[in-house]
Amino acid sequence: MLDLGNGSLGPLQKYLDPSLIDAVYLSHLHGDHWLDLVPLAHVRRHQPDAVRRVLPVMAPVAERGRIAGAFGRSATELADVFAFADPSDGVLGPFEIRLIRTAHPVETHAIRLTAQGKTLVYTADTGPFDALTDFARGADLLLAEAGASQGSHQLGMHLTGADAGQLARDCDAGQLVVTHIAPWDDPAAARRAAASAFPGTTTLAVPGAVYDL
Image (tube, rainbow, N blue to C red):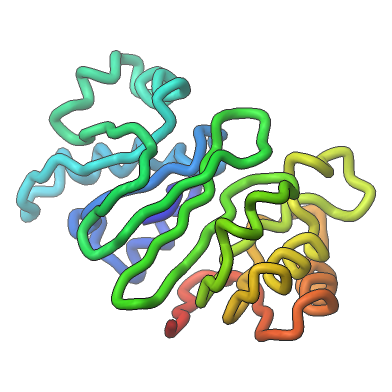
């Protein structure tokens, strides 16, 4: 699972039993990307018909105290439910993992997942930076944030829709999915801005969507 922001665990249960999650990757520890780790811990501890398994959680080490603070205890006291690991390149299950630090105010990593010759790249939260293009090069699916509207004070720490489309074009992505649009912005406008820069398939991330690579 890539990120688990506030309000995401409820809708997730329409599609997946939370006890079946194998691992969680947290791009960074702003609350909209991890806060439902708290109810997930309760579900996995107390679900009577589930086999208790400690869940691997890859999260920025410098910020990990925030997670423990949400529980009112130290990170070591969460060891019965979460096994924290530092963000790093490597292999997890069927996936080859590569990470890159992004342009965001707290430690944040984009992730590149490859399995069976197919690649998904998730930008996480970031402003534009040159190395991101090479990192995402040839992705079959680019999941790119568009958290900033043109002219926003958040330029430099989030992408706009146009930035997402430009990134998809420059890295020669197979398809672009635009996500993380602010609730005060127009998703359709963000998609149009992305599509104007990227000639490939451009869609908006919506709950329950499935993408074949």
